[in-house]
Image (cartoon, rainbow, N blue to C red; front, side, top):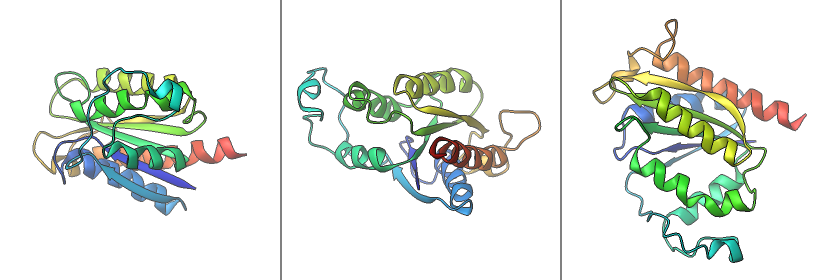
Length: 189
């Protein structure tokens, strides 16, 4: 079984990547194969609303989203990570969400487990999590929870607080990894 981590941050090695990688590490320790897809450096255009995908089941745009489509379809679980930008997900995350329209229309992600990780400097995590959970539900995915990491500077989540009073950011990331494995296994029983 395979867990895909998607890092929707414009920078590599940042807080979102650190937390998604930690979630994948926990999933790997539980016996899952893992893969990381990083939006930084990828060329993915926004959806142009042409609706051609409703006839062909695939987007007409020829860019790096083709690779992500393949990874999304083969994954049993998906950890979707985004930094919080102005009380929502990053522009990179929104592009991925919008470009999954053909996958939603043809229910290609239905039944897959999905979890969210958001990183923030101060505020906005609840709005970003809400958007990601709605995205998962629209695709009829099984929501396996989420995690929050506080940290303004690159790498700060390693020592930063999590979204709950009793967990660090890294503890939340590990919990996300364990929760996604649990959701995958329960759906395959």
